[in-house]
Image 1 (tube, rainbow, N blue to C red):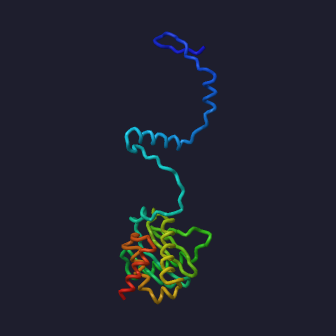
Image 2: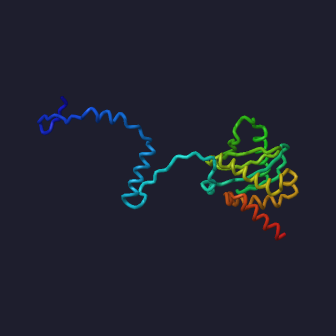
Image 3: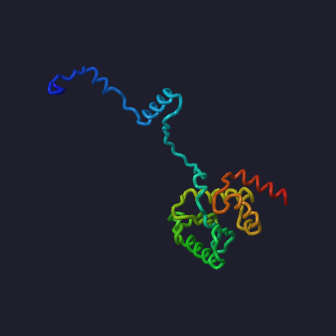
Length: 213
């Protein structure tokens, strides 16, 4: 018989009935998240307010651009396969000779890269995120610690805005309407930081600018 010692005296432990053990084994296992939810609900009822926030784990494919709004974009380039730069916007001070050198190096880097590799590659002390649409390469240079997937979505959003504004955009639209492309880019990115991520808002602002013309 099991005993416990209290101040040197041994006394028998209380016996647990067999039905009690059967009851414990028959209890279904509970999900740890459900237990945490129950604790949060009890705390809420006791104190009249939520004292413990229990996050629910969800998987979402939508990128939250607001969390990357403070990251720095060094430059954005739009180049064709022949190496001609159709759009270049620098958010850091560089000499003209250095800009031409950067454009040449970035083009050689993304054009010769195997398609089976990822769409981001180290460039000097930073990294370049790029996407190819038909014969055009959209390239962003950011810090080495920045989120690559977020900037891939930024490039795609910029292309969607151009396609919506020019109605099935092509390279010639960017060449003959380069001033409008820069206006769209300034609405989207300002001083190297994301300013507006709503395609509808940017299109509406561009419509207002066209009315003023």
